[in-house]
Length: 154
Image 1 (tube, rainbow, N blue to C red):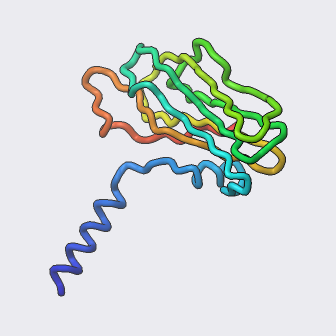
Image 2 (tube, rainbow, N blue to C red):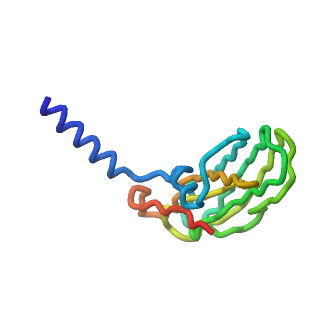
């Protein structure tokens, strides 16, 4: 019994020291919004690779209206470790049911760090984020050496 308790305490300690992953719930609380999907809409955020310093990446954000119809805004926010090159970072559009909006962005990794990319859609009183941890590395810097940096909210 004592060994199990010690093992459990060690396991809890190790998992509490693990690198945090920025979840939509954390971001949404900072955006002063509620996680809710009454219309079943969704948003996804993908990056082509975890870049080395100076490399270019492709960032793709896909929003699907599902059963929502109306005006929607889709936004991508790049952290300071990434430099915008081209593509749409924001779209305001009227969508019909099951319509997809896709944003293709090219960016360059310009600063080493444990960066978190964020995109979100909003309409009416709903704001729903998507986040991806995407550190910028350089020779001699391992991802485990970096501290995750949450997105800066505007």
